[in-house]
Image 1 (cartoon, rainbow, N blue to C red):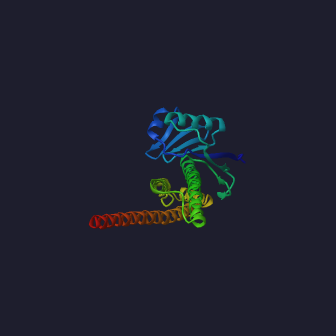
Image 2 (image 1 turned 90 degrees about the horizontal axis):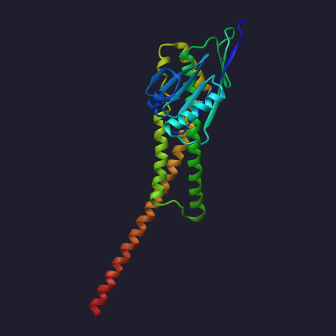
Image 3 (image 1 turned 90 degrees about the vertical axis):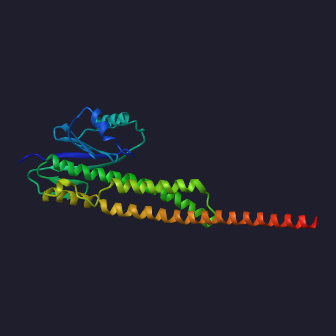
Amino acid sequence: MEQAIKKTITGYHLGDRLDLKELKNNLAFNCIYADPTELMYDAENGSYIGIFDYGSIVFFGVDYSTQTNIINAVRTILNIGSAELKRENFDVEINPDASYKVIFDRLIIKTLTIDIAKIIMLNIAQSVALDYYIEQSNILLQQTFQFTMELEEKGRFSIKGNALLKYIGRLLNLKNKITQNIYIFDSPNLTWNDEYLNQINTDLSRELDIKLRHSSLQDSLNTVKDNLDILKDINQHSYSSKLELIVIVLIAIEIINLIISKIL
């Protein structure tokens, strides 16, 4: 009976898109796969590094010290700030005598191949990216809630004009990033002709609640957008009312001047 091997997969999200071409030219590791959206490096002894253009880096069985060094190298190469990163862990148990199974935070497989490692890392990359976008969405939701509370309590709100438009732009930019970067409805090419890989991908996606979290994220962003649209309409109505008042005052002044000129 062969001994089971445990590998820990750790995913990080750096908060911005990554220039994969620049990284491929400067990272001193053996790149075993590259396409416009993903780089995969062999870290030796059945360990791998996956870097995704939407900002996620995933380490498959790589020790924490090496993880830190690589993240610092990526930050240096791409001139990325050192803000605290979103992080997610997942375990893989490789056991030739066990049955395939996906349970909470753990996948059990008989053997490990590069393709299986890629599918696992892709799911963790998507999951940690979702964590990042959910956090950004919650910040927008909380700030929008403050504006609506001002409206309820004071009959007015503090964000106006260009500041409101920039805030709406921030929301739309976040929605566009999510649409561009989270491919939850598309199965990876690797799974198209491999039933086993497709099963792993489907089971991991379900275990990580990727579709559910994505749907919840979209609902939150839509709520923020609906609220901001109302605030924008109120702001535009208030601006139009002020313009109308100014026009009325100007007309009144003209009438008064006309009356005075006729009297004199």
